[in-house]
Length: 359
Image (cartoon, rainbow, N blue to C red):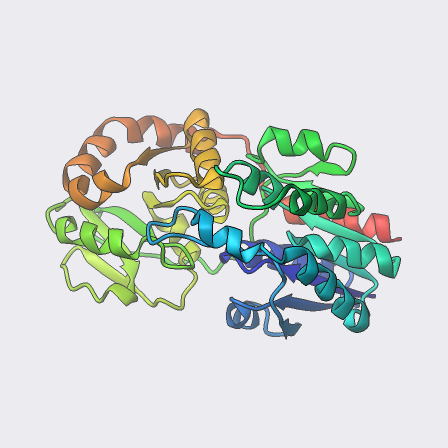
């Protein structure tokens, strides 16, 4: 059987999650053949999944960010000005080219309509949906007709799999086709070990789009003042401080999480999933007007698995904030991380369910 996987062009998280699901599907049934379609991060897909067929093609869903990573409302409005026409053209092209027996999408709405018209099952994987995301912005950057189109297309999926921390209202809206699953993380992680003479190890993670680049550059000017900590950052910053180790910018930073005492970064779902899996505490950076990040931060804070710091504090006061955090709040966060009950076999659960529904 042949599966086609549509990956949205936003961030590295969908790539990692879909890779985990594909790997588990192929472990159960080695005869399965997959084609992965995306555009922005196609080279990362080819690097992570070198044995799969790939298609470089924009999957018709995107949004625009301002310099600080917050949603750029006018730019998003412009992106979706002719969305419905573009959506119909996209579906027409996919109907000509798609020869799959089933579809998995994270989270490309047209994929579900392609499945419906081709009479093949389609499955969604999402920790948030774009209809929810855009509806949380003010003013609403898409028209109600586009929003209705999203709803109609998503309803065509055979199942949609939602991991922990998915906003409850999304699960309620899609309850007829929703399945809650454990966290989705990679199974075969190439753990990287570090040795810094007993110092407190901190990993700084930027987003795939480099949203935190300017903030990390500012924070680096103060990091040298924190003698008790050793920091790991991307080689793209070209930092030469004695308490900083550079990681090649092309490496998967999540491979280092298990050997860290703390991860500082945006509240991206892949980052928090990997930290929970590795039981590594998080210090998450606040990001105004981004509903996904805000929802993730609130959930993590409520569970006591991490805390958050403002961008201003991170840029200008990390040398004062971090020692206080480690001395006080970190102890409870570390305890909670070591004792949480979250399971991380979401890929196995999804793969088994998909194959059961295909049989």
